[in-house]
Length: 102
Image 1 (tube, helix red, strand yellow):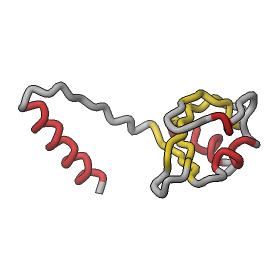
Image 2: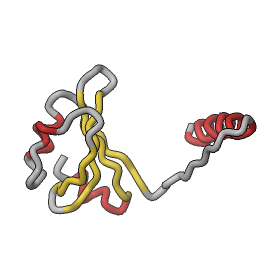
Image 3: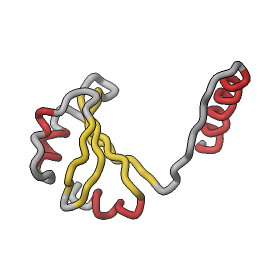
Image 4: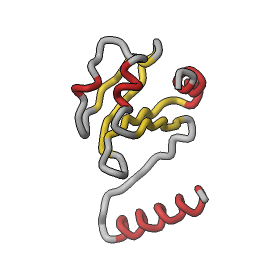
């Protein structure tokens, strides 16, 4: 499935570039994404963060949070059903550290 998705994206990027568009991308195989979805996502995560009031984060906000003793990027944005969620891009070698509390 991934190969099919990448080929599809590449096809559209080439079409855009052929019309003079400036487009590029970089695949980061060493990264993953953890998403907490739903109206209580911030409440659940609040117990694992230090020094940040997650109730003050709104759609499109981006902050670097200390989660369970390590720094991880966080963004809050609408979920697929209009509810909020938090997403964390992280290096795969941090996977067990970040996911363990969940």
